[in-house]
Length: 453
Ligand code: PHE
Ligand code: NA
Image (cartoon, rainbow, N blue to C red):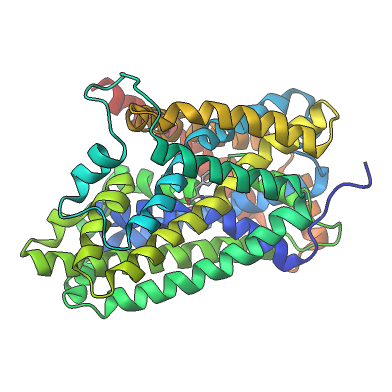
């Protein structure tokens, strides 16, 4: 057991953790979520969620991984025998995500190519669903494979197999040392370009304009916590797995603060870039900013192509934008897949190579279902359930099990304090034992309520 893989450097670990955190959620989820939930006023619940749930949970997951030095299932089982299933639950969620996340990366690869000559023409929406995805007429219908989705998808899997096969230090760490600095540089170029376009200011005003009347609205707070959980890759088994590769003498608390703030900084940067670009588009087409706003797949593959078409040097900026999606996506994809690679390796005592072949192979086969003409419907449906139930439940199980049943927060605190510069206090145990479970419980009820109504 003592030859467990390790990160080569502290920076390597931090870049990998940031690589997992910084993903599509920052670029296409945060901007619209903030805008719809009070704009500038959203930053208050958002910051509150970061400090009371995001960073405390990140510290907890880092501590569990570092202390027990195992994949998520093994680490939980060492906290308490009956908790292994929580690890598998989280691994299962990550596995499912890893079957459709690479599809989006595949689209982005194709779109960085389509950018040259703005090949989507003047109707980006019909190009995306019609020409490119060849979406079947009715939901639930499965048609033929779409070759232009299939080939880049296989390329994504080849990269995932390559980096995961090479291991923690020579694979995951190397990938993130390339991807994350490149992503930051590219993204800063895009944001500078976006804020200097005509109309950008109008977009930014709309984004930051605070609507304080929303602040008493429970759903705004649920949105803030939801964004923080998703964005920090918490309760996905990822951060436990990654921190299990930390050397014995590694700071935990400080690393969690750095990861949390880096992710939020990137989120803010993305909000600025996206809304500046939306403001530009609105001014070019005589629309209100609110008419252009979108999120998710619609923002990236329908609205952004339109924006890019209107921009000077569209080929270059289109390429950079979609390349940034590819980089952000790949680094997150690697982290999701590592959860089950590590889990399989330990559970069945097999080599990394075998675990990559079995786990990755299975996920790759399942991902083919999304590469056919009904793929987008399927993706939307699975993603909806994962986000609304899978993740919130996983987080709830996790904190309740650790804080209430195993009553292990004090042990974990002692462990974190023994290696970290910043010492934890009562605030940390209150956030995890009380605030987070209450918020997550409320979140589950809200989701169920919207389901019924
Ligand atoms: N944290 C990533 C983001 O913000 C999303 C993600 C979730 C990545 C789960 C991996 C696993 O986009
Ligand atoms: Na994120």
